[in-house]
Image (cartoon, rainbow, N blue to C red; front, side):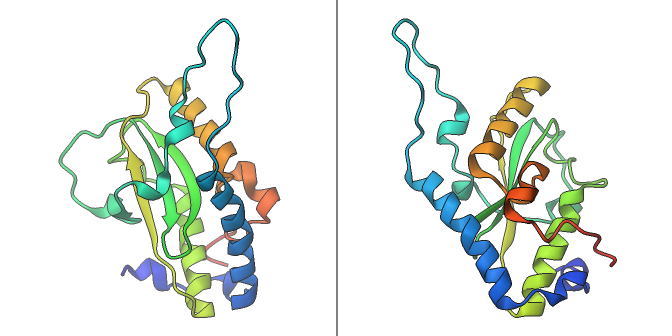
Length: 179
């Protein structure tokens, strides 16, 4: 466990009931995605190509500690999509893309703060939490294609740490970790 996961946060005021309720709303939605097959609009003349977003299940990817970027990595990295998941609550929290999976989080990344706040709120409420990251290494190398796939997955799963979904979920973890 890193020092970062034990830092105080302004989110300590969230009660266990509030945090649990917030997660349940998201989980109920995401369960419908997991249980329902993807629907695609058919056409009479051309076959519809399946998108990787239709079948990609972030919960089945190999788990890595959310602080993987602190490790000594020897490879050059590859294009990938990555998924921040709370495996304790079975929630997809964030979807991202990168051209070099082994280097993406070495610098500044707002999602690091969201994870710190999320974990700190759980610790304060004495709730279990298990945040990990999974990489899907089959993402397109071409940036626009990779970002289009990322966008499709953010829209499909409505991951609460992605800014596109903050308003829908009233995401409380995006504030400063220093407040």
